[in-house]
Amino acid sequence: MDCKMIQNKIDELIYTRGIQLDLQEQSHLEECNDCQKYYSDTLNSAQLLHEIKQKEPVLDNPEELTESILKSIQDEAQEYPKAKINYKIITRLLAAAVVALMLSLGIEQYMVLNKIQRLETRLGKVQQTHQHEKYLISKATIIDISILFKDDDPSFSLEKVSTLFILNRIKQSNLTLYDLNRYMNEDDSLKSSLN
Amino acid sequence: MNHSQIIHQIKKGNQSAFRLLVEQYQAYAFKLAFRIVCNEEDAKDVVQESFIKIWRNINNYNSSTKFTTWMYKIVTNSAIDLYRKNARQNSISLDESIGTVSKAQQNYINRNQDNKELSILIRKMADGLPEKQRMIFVLRDLQEMDSQEVQEILEISETTVKSNLYHARKTIKEKLLTLMAYERR
Image 1 (spheres, each protein chain N blue to C red):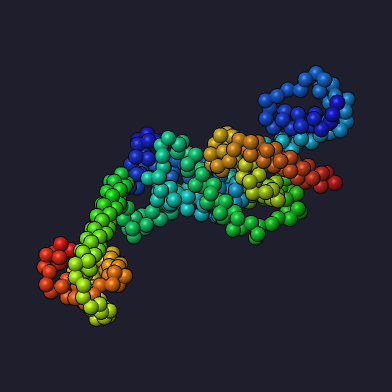
Image 2 (image 1 turned 45 degrees about the horizontal axis):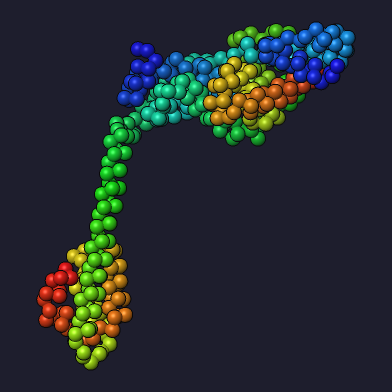
């Protein structure tokens, strides 16, 4: 019989105490000196381990430790008063805020794109009906146009982006100075349709 | 006040309820911490730090988990952190441990004997074990936790517990036998 297998069984027998050696294993143990020594060593070390386990670390003066722990949390409570946080409400508020933000940004984007589309349609019509001498639009005029599209809050980045987008489209459409003047001064209906 | 009422009161910020909890569990937490860090003062620090963490995080405690398992996980993790920090500094000589083993072997150790002796014994047994084997040995064989609790505290599988415990026991047995052999000379 394999000694290693028997020795594994001995470990199991001594440490877990859930098994027993069968007759064949027992007779091997009675005859094999190596396995007998292994059994005796394992038993000795397990007994020593048991002694060690029985000796428990002793906490001297537990009251002192208790007071020390409580003092720490009292100090902390004074420094940072424990907020009564209702996580459910916070989660719901956060979800509502996210939905509101998404709606707001969506609507804003829709308005800008719609405005651009209408501007392009109008400018396309102007070019088809009026044949005038074409001028390049000066930088100053572009600034004038950009003022038209400026929001009350110039820091709002979406507006800045939309303005740049519009200016780019105007540049690409070969707008004449006449068209621009018409837009700026004469055709109020055009202007109102864009706002 | 029963256990769940105590937890409920602590969640509301009741420090008197927290005192009850500390009084109830600090000794066990100390034993656990001591067996990991092997030093009385360090073990007290671990217990203090752990209870502060419990106070701060009590709202994260889910009552579907056994409270003691949640608490011992906090204690074990704090102790492991300190153990890692101290690991390089703590080494123990063979000579220092031989006399201690001899006393244990002759059953001289009384339950209330000083902690230093026990610290030497545990360190001598567990020093050199890989960290996982050491923790499993401490929780399973010294603290006598069941396998399920060890799995939850260390977040490992049953197979990992079994195989690491097997190797830990084997190494410890060899160490103890070596020490006993030294003493027979």
